[in-house]
Length: 196
Image (tube, rainbow, N blue to C red; front, top):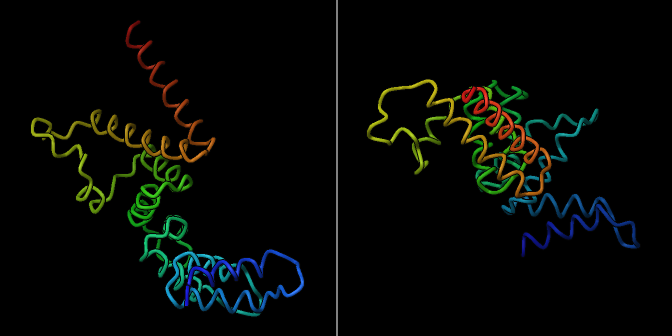
C-alpha cells in the first residue's frame, strides 16, 4: 500500500528494458499511485497525459492530476500550472495566478519557477496580493515609507528578482547566475553614471 513505492516501480517499468519490464504495468502502477494521492505520481501522470495523442483527448485529465499535485504544493506541478496560467493554455490567462504558482515553487527551490518569477518582476508585474499578505519581509510594512515612490518600488522589484535568481543559481541553474551577473553589471553602470 506504499504509494511512493508504486510510483518508483512504475518509473522502473517505463525506463528499463529488462525482462519483466512492461509499460502497461508501469502505467497501471502510476495511475494507482496518483489516485492514492502521491504528488510525484500525480505530477508525472499529468505530464504524460499532456503529450499530444491523436487517440485520446486528455487535457482535462492531465489538468486534473496537475491540480491534485498543486494542492500538495509539488514544485514541478506549481511551475507547470504557472506556465499554463501565464500562456493561457487550457485556462484564461492570469498573470497573478501564474506569479503565485511560480512564487510557491521557487520557495521549494524550483529553478525554472524562480527564473520565471524574477523575470516577471523585472518586467514590472506586481507581486500578487496573496503573496504580499503572507510575506513577512513585505516592503509595505515600513512605517515611514507610506508614500508610493515609483523609484523605491522599482528598486524593491529588482531586489526581489535578485533573490529569485539567487534561488535558481543555488539550484545549479546557469541562467540564474547569468541574470545575477547582468543585474550587478547594470547596477555598476548606474553607479558610474551617477558619479560622473
